[in-house]
Length: 352
Image (cartoon, rainbow, N blue to C red; front, side):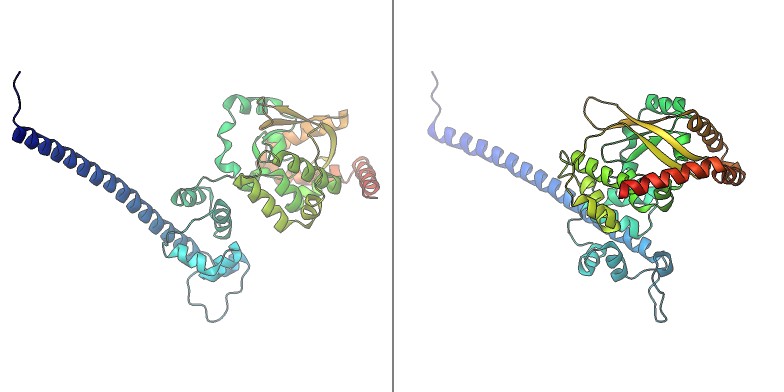
């Protein structure tokens, strides 16, 4: 057996340690480079976000958001403090955001800024991407509606039908439903939510015969559904918006009532064809209570005929003026007037 001299073993030990040390040093440098790259990427993203916010702020006139221009305004577009006030955030905080400070931005604040700055869907998506956040609105989460489901919606015409989630976001709909309560195509995708529309949209509210009862029932359904989503930003954003924009919702929400989803007959006053009596049915698209196909079947022959007329109107958007004029004759006919008056009496009875 050959015995290695002590000085030789010591030399090899030093060389081995040196090689390991070099590897450790290189690994440390590579890790540092990774952290540096991420930090640099975050800084670039913050600068892009700041520049984008400034550009959108400067293009909006005070008149567009209901503010007086004033005689001494020099800032193009809105001032920072005006954006902060309209978005319900602190002026200092918003100033830091436009200064590329490293601060956290919640999805609620991004949603408020998108509304204040009148961003279109593409600009809104860009804002959330720059902030490295996920947009929780239905406009960004509509991918769950498959082509097969859309085919079913189309085949159900002239029966009104749509796909909603448990938060009442309207994810897809057919032509008849598009004109059932208002011109749904004219509503921005992020506002296509039955809770928002029934509490804030004038035409939608006018179309619901038993409005007070409907708002109370929907608030109770929303509270029941929200039990499994208490920490999700989209749900909290919806409730916060409704509380700020609707006294009726605030009152009903504080009742802490809960109601399970159930089918029932509903009455709508359609501006094109008159009073409609419809049976509402939910068809769940998965084992878990989430997305559902909402259908409205006619409760009588008169409603069936009027749904066919509504579908014909919905297929001819360029004949809207003529269709509305024709609808005015229908709504003002004695039959429809009597039905509407009866429905109004019934609603007053419910309120009492």
